[in-house]
Length: 171
Image 1 (cartoon, rainbow, N blue to C red):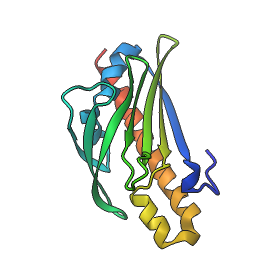
Image 2: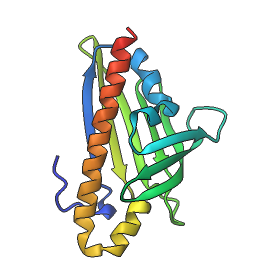
Image 3: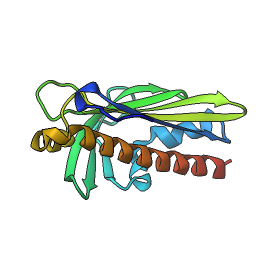
Image 4: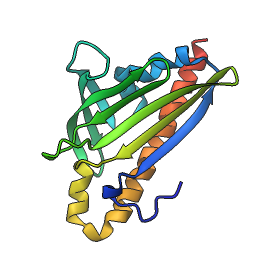
């Protein structure tokens, strides 16, 4: 992937995928249950639902920690829930624009007797904690964005590996 020169305002994305030896119906609950995500993450420490349902419009809060960015909590909203094909959520921005600070998407496609699982993360366009780092060092914006995208890619790869292992073990 090429991110050199990416700026936060460009809403840069990271995409990773894997093939899983399990049908989408077995993979779906592993990606659509956000409460499972902290166990797969080095950054997301816990997640609590604010809404009783888990459909489009459901709200939750994630509690995060990062060695360089500190600790923070942010609310999010499920924006797509099309079982067993697509699940997505957006995190609230930290400004008054109502624009999300990030969008995370899982896409599940039947593929050769299993599932092609793709995870996509998009930064912005709303402000996030990363925006504060960019504000403090605007001349380093491209490097800040590049490093954060690499962290996303690494974390997403670990997540997909964990989902694959769980789905294949439950078969």
